[in-house]
Image (cartoon, rainbow, N blue to C red; front, side, top):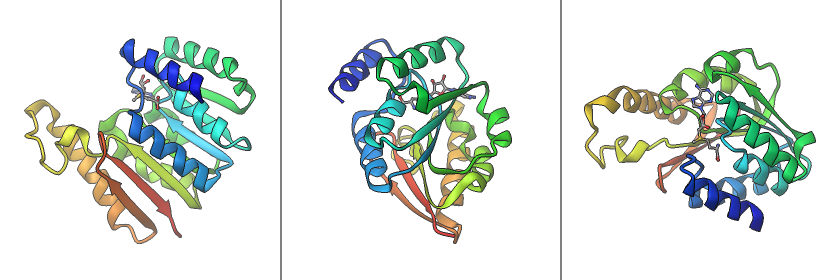
Length: 194
Ligand SMILES: C[S@@+](CC[C@H](N)C(=O)[O-])C[C@H]1O[C@@H](n2cnc3c(N)ncnc32)[C@H](O)[C@@H]1O
């Protein structure tokens, strides 16, 4: 894991939008607790959270979705570097097009793609999440705009409202149990209970 921490540091220095430190720790502690066999990651970037999840849970396999071809090349190289390439695959393209055609069933979904689309993705993500499975989403408090800790600039209103719809859906559905964690950019952890 030390090498992952080093690469995360480098990725941050290079301006890659990777998961923040406490959120990363929380993600891994959830994976350790849940022991998922099949993981879906929306927004792979250079693959470091995916690798860390696979190293945490040696019986897991990972499917990722990523739009940026150049980033995918780096993620694949990183998978090889850590010897997890046989357990990890990436679908290249826009998550809006790929999510609706996913047919697998997942124990754990890590949602970390474009923030304005979580609400749109939610129905299909819930349909491919196994009962007992977990949906872990980053950025749900969106810089403090959601919850009005910080005044929302006009240009972010649409994304903010979309995220509020997402949070409302995951906290009011009786098939789900959701916890919102106010660290960094905000994390939601949702268990599909039925
Ligand atoms: C926050 S980063 C993901 C970080 C990664 N999950 C991690 O923990 O290190 C978000 C990623 O989503 C990708 N992305 C943005 N829009 C997308 C879309 N419409 N479909 C798929 N991927 C997208 C970006 O290229 C970026 O790599």
